[in-house]
Image (cartoon, rainbow, N blue to C red; front, top):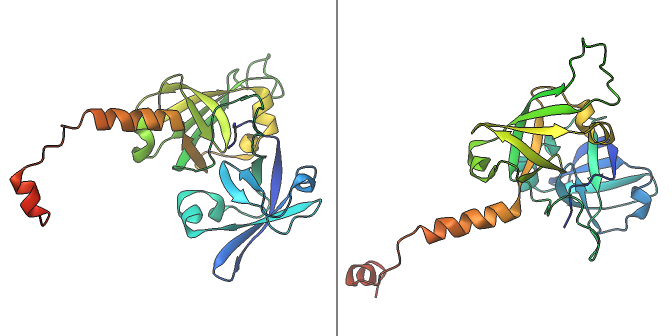
Length: 224
């Protein structure tokens, strides 16, 4: 389990086909030396298993499901990825519960400073930013105003949702410490909805279903 508090960014060194899977190599000095073979870690919101680690690099294999559901398979060499190690039991939950199970990719529509660039008070190092992401239709029922969402593995709070585009506020620390400052409009971003919202939604759907009634027609149709 993760909390969406990014520890550092890494740099994608390669993404190659090896024996039927795609293997990525990430340069991550500082974090890589803390890994052991088989450890889990979050890579831009995707839970992966570290392989062939050394003090500077780690590798991870991407299953077809990961390639289909996330942006990792389409990254270019040199891309920055957000990195987070799992949360130890008893540690403070700084963000929210993030599983590393990406629900799908959205599209970055805009990432703009709150203070206009033309303003004499604009300072790109200290300004807040507004992030807008178009959410896939099958994820929209889980976007809740003031609720949590993980975008690129970052724990964020939904400031607004118009039914299609989610808006979140980005602090300067988050902007510069994560890969957000390297992304441009149109880029795919990994989205994981809040698991608690998904559970509540599932329970609500179950509660709204009519009670099951055992009938003669049901028995005949099911071979009894």
